[in-house]
Image (tube, rainbow, N blue to C red; front, side, top):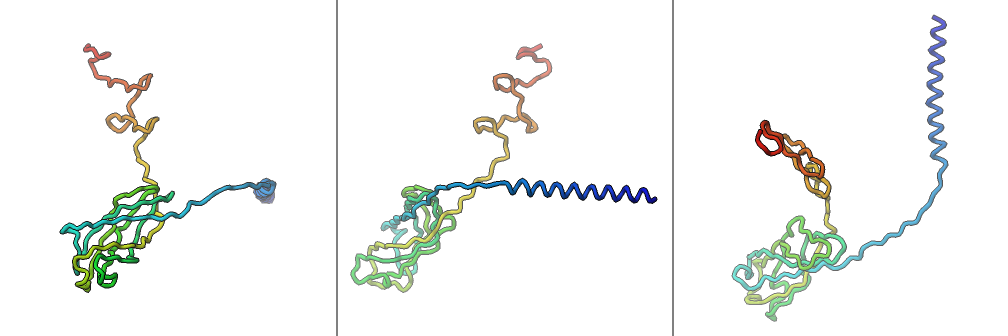
Length: 208
C-alpha cells in the first residue's frame, strides 16, 4: 500500500510541472515583440441633399382647408453614402396672393414613409415623401394662390445591411451548378459538359 501511494504522488507532481512549463513558454514568446505603423485615412464631405416637389394644379392635387395630398419628390444625393429622409419641415412660404402668408396657408407635411432611402450619387430619384395638408384654419385670402415652399430635410446615413447569401451552390463565374433529380450536382464529362443520363437498352444514343 505504501509503495502505491508514493507512485501516485510522483505522477501528480509531474503533471503540475508540465502545465507550469507551458504557461511560462507562452508569456516568454508574447513578450518578445515590438512594432509600429502609420495609417492614412480621410472622411467624406457632407453635401446637401435636395428635393424638388411639384404638386401641379390638377383636381387631385389642389389644396383646400382640411385636405391632405400625397407627394412624391425628385431627390438628389451627391454624397458618397446612401441617406434616409425622416422628416420634412416648412421654413418659408411664398404666395402669389399678397395677403396670404405662411400662417394663413396653414400647411404642414405628414410623416415620411419609413426607409425612404436615396443611394449615393443618385440624381432626381422619384421618392414618395409622405403628404402635405392644408389645415382647417387656412385663411380665405389663400384661395386660388400658388405656393413656393422652402423646406428643411432631416435624416441621416441609411442603414445598409448586406443581402443574405443564397443557399444554392455556385459554379465558377457565379452561376448555380446544374442539379440532377434529388438535388445532387450532375456529373460532368471532360470539357465541362454534363454526362448524358444512362438508360437501359440505349448505348451512345443508339438503340440496342
